[in-house]
Length: 125
Image (cartoon, rainbow, N blue to C red; front, side, top):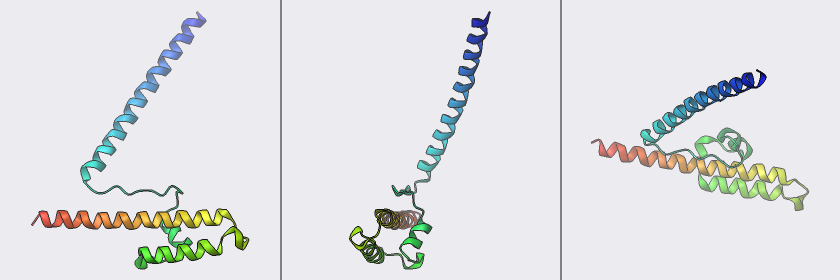
């Protein structure tokens, strides 16, 4: 009797899990298809997981002055003054590196977005 009850519990649990997994997969596939259908470039994320806003604060930049030269200039200065030779930490250097990486990816994304809008704007005329 106990083994029959145990088998019923296992089958019921497996059935519920299977339905939930199937539903989650359908939702993920639908979201992925919607992103692909929009035709817009995908925004890349930094490996460090730092947001654009935080990256701007770390490198002491404003969004309206964002350029590759400014990012490189701030990165080089902050990375150098926070080096181990200066008595500072690898952690700070890592934050500075990931902030630079995030902002470079943000610039690439904005450039792709600009080109995709220009491309779609000229083709609709």
